Length: 185
Image 1 (cartoon, helix red, strand yellow):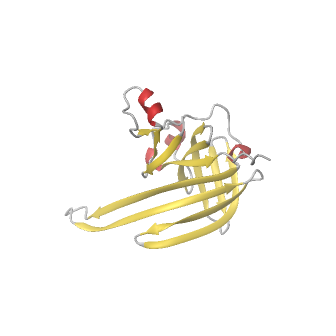
Image 2: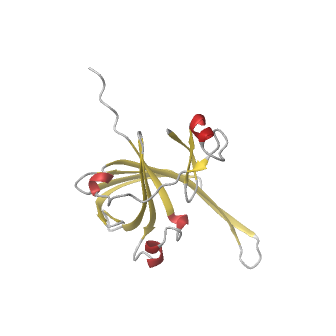
Image 3: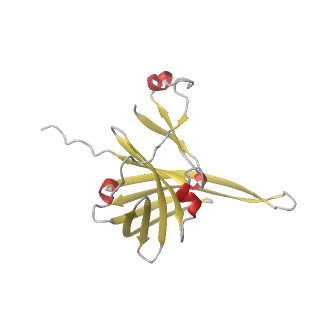
């Protein structure tokens, strides 16, 4: 099945299959969007598995109200794209760009990445540290999907480690395209 991104939300990426594949899926109308199920990896992941360029993008819009009156007090919006480039030696380059409340931004940094069990630990230059819980891994013909939960800046709550139903609003889907085959000679 070939997948194409048709949008993202704060919690999940939404994909649509080719209409022919979608029509074969029980209860799914041809071409209708559906949530992609990403199961945990069958075997433990390694840094070598994560080597390559990973992309995550999404948008969030929040309307803020006064909790006592319910009156509108403002809003906050962000659209961004982040690319992680991970090497087999555990180096990570993080490049983010987007628009936050009408202002464009771009930031780049490097650091180290470690994978211990299902915990991804990223330490960026300048001291920033983030942890993620690896929740899923899906390898397709042309794309690999990594489902992680975070970022967590400190201890990860125990209930997140015990149940994938906890903290779902912090789940992120990262995509890695397969290497392009060499051109024929």
